[in-house]
Image (cartoon, rainbow, N blue to C red; front, side, top):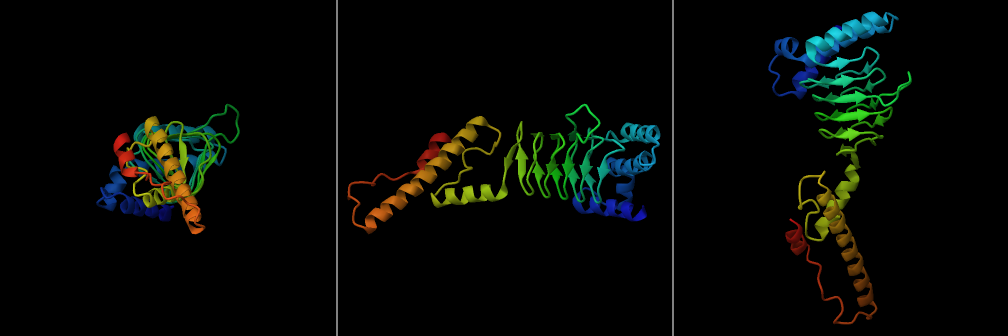
Length: 248
């Protein structure tokens, strides 16, 4: 138990630049208090003292504004930052080294006594106000954007943003940016708001234009090699800068 407490304190000091001392963490961090109370509540819960576990959990919510059901499984070195308004349901599982910000809900979508809450694998970060609803897994190292509503599985290392959440794979996003850079422009220069429907449509059009331009250039290069490319064909250049100015 003492080792877990030391781990919790060290985790907060490591991940929160506002934490200045061990004493400050012990006395002023509701996320730290919520984890301690949860462990006590779960100890009774696992020994079939269900009402007592729920009663302790209830008082933990009263003092910290963080509600963790005693049936939930919480891993090691979990960091609950600020914590106000967090709800973690009965069958939820939170892996090691996860970070959960204020207003997060790990909720269920079923009315039966089955696995109905999400599982967060190791190293997941859930942004403020996000809702993760259902009995699926959020893969290791994944990121849930603030205020996202996630209702399906998130692959390891991916990012989920929006309502309902869209899955952004890191490798795919990197490839997209590299392809756009070869055309001389940034595919993300139109707007930084990834949830804007107009932005999504424009990104799709620009990506398609970049892909088509690359294919056309490859075709002309092949035709030139065999001497079959007329001089007056293909002089029109795709101007990505001009396109960005039009949609910016």
